[in-house]
Image (cartoon, rainbow, N blue to C red):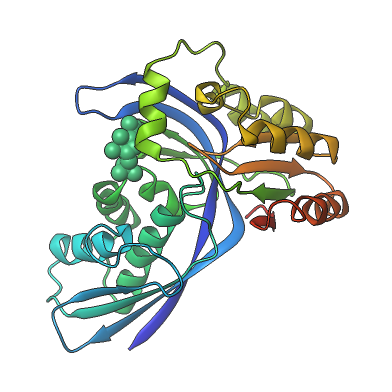
Length: 283
Ligand code: C5P
């Protein structure tokens, strides 16, 4: 039997990082948003005991180092479902090491898919608890939509949906490691922080102009001045973005556009220099 789940990209409209905790993780506050840029995740049961990840055309790990593998493993461990073989096929469109939550979203799709595949009555809450064992962003990715995340990312509050808008997402060649970016942040004094509570309020009243003003990410402060991230951010603004910011720990940059046509033209322009440019409405 085989089933397919879509795994949307995750964007951070705000992202603030607090102190490193004794367990090595950092306290974060972030308004997260999903966008219609998808990996496709297919699960198939087979007559063995193995979990196998297939991800053609990439050099992603196919074993326990892949969050999708870990998600299937955690699902079997946390439920009473007899272990069976699973082939997880990942059709990747979300760039890796981009701050777009691609690996986390694939893992979340595996959890949702396993629940469907085995027709179990695992609650949404239980699925999010499993997700937190897989990775910090996975609980949000199980839920999707617009949400405020706290703790290490797993404490979620649903927010009203972002008013309709378009994202242009640009991934420069430079790759950012999440763990390295957190370490860099530990070494600097953060000058200003985005206000996620104000963002939640702006979402509540659907004030897109105010939402755009509040977009911000402290990880940008850990970048060198000549980072390509800033070049892309400036280009997005010049091409009419209503807000532009790096997402997650980068290196992808998102531009938020109210008008689809402006976003389309900006994407067309940026993809001349950056082949990994995507146009995606908010979900
Ligand atoms: O949870 P996840 O495995 O996705 O996190 C990857 C790395 O990012 C962690 O090992 C940690 O170094 C860092 N991290 C953090 N604080 C968070 C989330 C991630 O320091 N809230």
